[in-house]
Length: 156
Image (cartoon, rainbow, N blue to C red):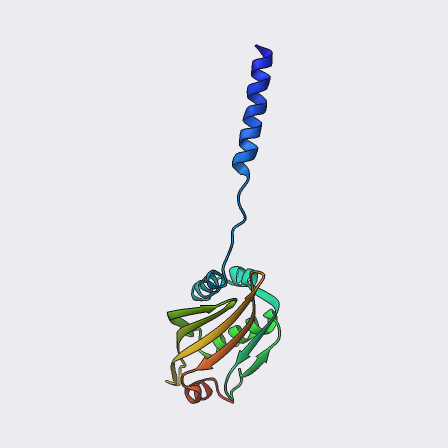
C-alpha cells in the first residue's frame, strides 16, 4: 500500500511538472507595436517601459519645441510629459487605422488630437515606423500628414 501511494505521489509530481512547462511565447513585431499603442491609449507607463528599449531612437518631425531625435526611453517619456502639459492633458491617440509589416519593421497610420485653452487644435494623421528587435521597440520614425499644423500647435 505504501509503495502504491509513493508511486502515485511521484506520478502526480511528474504530471504537475509536465503541466507547468509551457512553450515560449513568440511575440511578433506587430504584436509588440499593438501592445505599445494600446498602452499609449491607456496611459500605461509601466507597460510602455517593458516595450521600449532603454536606448530607443525616436525621430520626431518638424520645426517645433518637440522636434528632433530622442535618444533614450527617458527622453521619449519626457517628450510625452511635455505634450500632456502643453495640451492641458488633451493629447490623445484617437485612432489606429492600419498596420503594415515587413520583417521587424511595422508601419502604422495613427490619428492624434489635442486642444489648447487658446483654441489651438491638433487633429493630424501620422505614419509611424517602428523597428522591433528582441521584443523591444528600438527605433521610431514619425511622418506627419500636416507638419505645419503640428509646428503651430507645439510652437517654437
